[in-house]
Length: 517
Image (cartoon, rainbow, N blue to C red; front, side, top):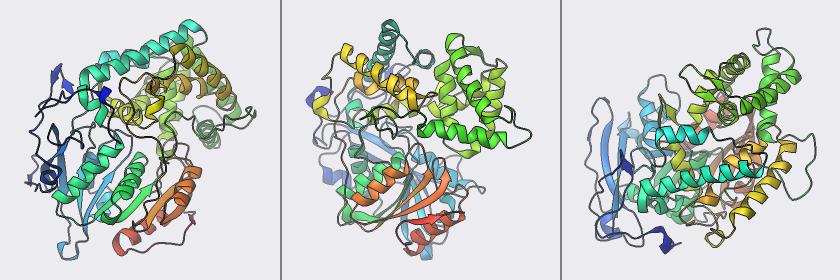
């Protein structure tokens, strides 16, 4: 779908690119035609300070309808196959987000302790890239670090009209800053552009087929690549499946078509209760051995810090939004549960440091500086919607609908509900129109795709994976009986063995295989 003209004007030979310290980053000269982009060859050289890694770069057009108008540079990193005589080709990946770095994901395979992608380096060249708008590839820029701190300190659980107006103003400032500091590129970072960039990369690598391992949002990239280029797909693994047919503004997996059923907790709240249950079974649990009481104390803590934020060791103040982001991060991986337990106990004593540090992992903050991950997340998500509905509602209507939704959702998600309703509708205030409507894909003509999903994943629920498996023309779904996000390299020898057998030997298990270890 062509980008709506309201996105902005491209100037021949350049683009108003992302700004760093107030200055637009330079853009490479565009190439005359798409064929010229596809005919590129990569000039590899050893990466400085990274023994064993080669660095290169390709150019991709900002707007595929006008490739001659402007280009951006996409840096690449390559780790060559250890056994070149048995090389199977190139394996690239995306670790999710949107906003996570595929470049850094491949670099992690340099670590001898890495048990993820590193195991596939024996017979694959591992090639990493950051999708446009992320990290090294023309990153989206929005608020300054200080302004981002202020934005995250917003009270996203408003109880009156003034509070709701304050939320709307915070979202407007964020969105306006993205357009001001990113420029025209903001309308060209959607997933449909990323998959075309990947195919230019495939061509520049001299590969007939592209092998791909996508996690979470990376599974959406994989599906759309297989839909557009089915004959160019090699072996594809999609872990923690994102359903591209779903709108970006849904509330988790809740059905809001009828009255809420009290007692049926939303997935995130259920998982927090699971975390507290696991802690309570241990004698040394820092928040006590009564999970019901701990859950009540956690909700009470959120109410207290909403009224009076607590301090951190670096002087920040942790209100309800930052505290909930920290808890939210802990639900992604069981390895974060001990940190959550300690952070919760510390917060009860008035120290918000642990919760803030967990929140920093979620939003990409390190020593006071923010990465491009949060801006990239919203920039991509907000382009995935119905272009006809963009700016179709007044602010009064939006805030009224959000207030009613928050009241509904709070019944099934007393911990996260109201906050998530008001902290996540940034797309309703986005300054550029969507470029691709949400829709499922069948990827007819592509080889079978291996899907993985944990049974208790609150971020990409199993129902989504099952829907995608039914929608794709050729897919095999493996269900891992486990809570949390991401199945591969996360404690299941069954899942890991299936992935290795597929990527190395092309062997697929029976559909709906269940892993229990």
